[in-house]
Amino acid sequence: MLRASHQVAYYPSALSRFSSYPHQPSTRPLSQDMSSRLPIELIEHSIHFLDGDFPTLATCSLVSSGLLPICRSLLWRDVKISMATNGKPKEALLFSKVRELLALNPDIGHYVRSSSFDFEHSVAMPDIAVSFCKCFPSLRSLTLHNIKSFDILRLLAAIDVIPSLEEFHLEDNIAFDNCSGTDVAHNSLHDELFPRLIKFSVVDGQSPSTAYQQMLSFLETSRHSSSLRSLDLRIGLERDHDDNTTTGPGVPSYAPQLDHFGILLNDLTDNGAIDSNGRSHMDQVFLQLPRASALRSLCIQYDCFAFFFLKEYLSAPGVNHGTTAAVSPYYLDKLSNLLSSSHTPPFPDLERLSLVFSQPLSWLFGSEAAFERLAQAILGESSSGGRRYPKFARLEVCFVLSVNIGVLHGDKGVKKAWEQFEVDKRKFVQMLADFTLAGVDVRVWMV
Image (cartoon, rainbow, N blue to C red; front, top):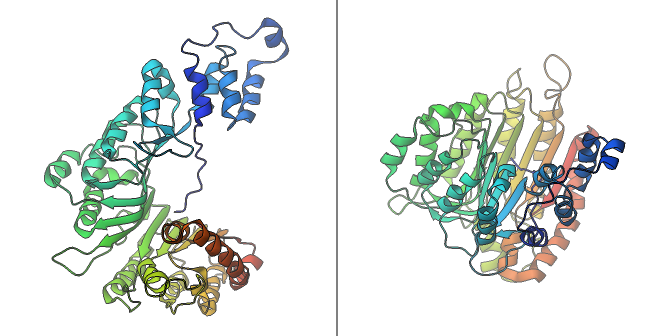
């Protein structure tokens, strides 16, 4: 699922304020004159309006011991940490600085509810960050970015040291390694892992097929998978050296309990031909999806980046980013058929659909009929009258391109791509007019 969660980076300027005061804030309570005029609950409510204003919150925390807890809860609720050993991280605290601060005042760790670690420009292993999270005894959500060459099963073993954890996310250029010591990790974790884990996602990256299948197998066999409510599996699979085929993930056996499911589909080879294995996997996924009957949110990512990369850059450098390619709307037709099949809608509580594309927006021109069928499948009447999906309220369409364009063409290339996107967006929104007229919240963007 495309998450739009409120994650606030802790600015270094605010950190320096804490570092400048190694002593505890004043232990004096609020003045009698102030407390006689304003109840403490009203003062705390007012401080909530400073949420995100880190320098002011840091100053308020030093005014009185009575204000310290509420200020710390806002200052340290969401912490973004960089594991970088070179380069200057943006809007993130260096791991070494956080470690020093918590050594001086470990009580701060109790206020952290969400933490993310970025491993860009770092050779550190992810289990170091996970182990460090023991300093956050009330941590609910953990996200790891840009981690390379790691054993997924051992990483899943490591998060067991965070008993309060409810969400675990792996994002941005994730690169699995083949699992070592798999049997030991698998057998030792069966009864311990995921006691409360509600959300798990792996988004953006590559994994060896065998390592990915080992992870999926573990999730299937763990009795604690019964706590999962959100599962997002949108990562590409590398072909193994001894096998030229890959088998993508299907819909898990515990799908009936999920309220969100995300998956990546791909039916194109690098040269744009239809990949029979990818097409078979796509058919399998749409055949199995109805078992997730409680879904309220569904995310499908169509990945043809390798074809896009070769066509737009390697084979024809300098070609306009808006050049149209003939990409089949087969996946949209399969989705429409699924949503309109049978007398009973497969997902009666569906509220949101997210479509993610690793291609230029202009490649969807020519698929107008496919989007019309999708709108009819979702907004059409059921056999008993009324809309088939009465709770459906939001359609998201996202194009994942800017980072890859920036790598190849720099800032000028990104600017050109954004300009082309804004031009194409105006035309594309007209293709979604049926959703807009029905009152659906339609959002189209590029990242």
